[in-house]
Image (tube, rainbow, N blue to C red):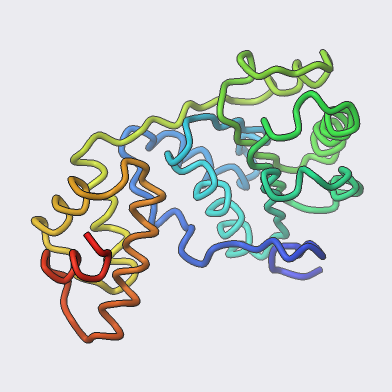
Length: 233
């Protein structure tokens, strides 16, 4: 059996930097611990994560898949925002994997074939004693699920609300992501990016990627004047 994540023919992969070590837990420390221990023999097999856009749902699901890979287990990441327009054939025989991470659940709710496929997916993974982590933009009770049996399955296991970071936490998250990328991000530059940049953390990380490429190309350190120039601010 291959030790890496199962690959879809559609080419969906994992971001190399979407790991637990690059995620600032903040008020989500218990959630991160549950995700890291999910693959243990005594770990919780079914986890449901919910929160607003930009709080790290996709990052955490991909980090869980990386964790599985590090343990020589097979994992699959399914972002339904990208895959939901396809029929749910990708859920067939999915219990052969050790971990399945389903992202953007809200994208397929209300569609009969998808809801039925997800219902059977829950049952098969539980019966096979495999692990499942699901993420959506709302809690199970708030989601508009038409199939009652699926609605009940979504409440199995443990549910976690991903708490957003405060401004200091956002600054710390930026500095952590910069360190992971081998960059030095001074406090005053981090504060400037937060003040001038977008509110969503994932968009701030995209700006940081742009700065990383620009600083490597120009062989410049991250300063406020350089950030203004590189990002057109």
